[in-house]
Amino acid sequence: MRITSTAISLNVDDVPASAAFLTEHFGYEEADAADGFAALTRRGGPEVIFLRRGLEVLPEGFRDRHADGVILAFTVTGLAAEYERLRSAGVTIAMELREEPWGERLFQVTDPNGVTIQLIEWATDGQGEHA
Image (tube, rainbow, N blue to C red; front, side):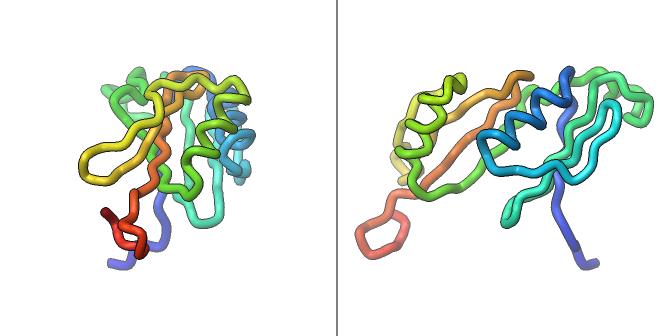
């Protein structure tokens, strides 16, 4: 098997709101859209697909589930600047900027549907290696 691309699919109530959030704040572009569906792309990132909860194309036991418990994580550079940019834009900060003992710096935001997006930057030892 050869995997040719990666996509993350999330069920939400308001597809246009989540699509606009990733487009406005994270540089995604809409690749395709229809009623209850949006596919977003970003160079160097996974495709993100939003599906409206309740769509009949979803399996019956899965249709009404929401993207709860899922974290869309992006490893970035300039984490502190990203934190300030998003905070200044009025984005809801769900977890304040922090550093974990294993060297991961992170914070979390939520989109209009409550989807958690985590931004991560790894601390380095001064020589480019993870601390």
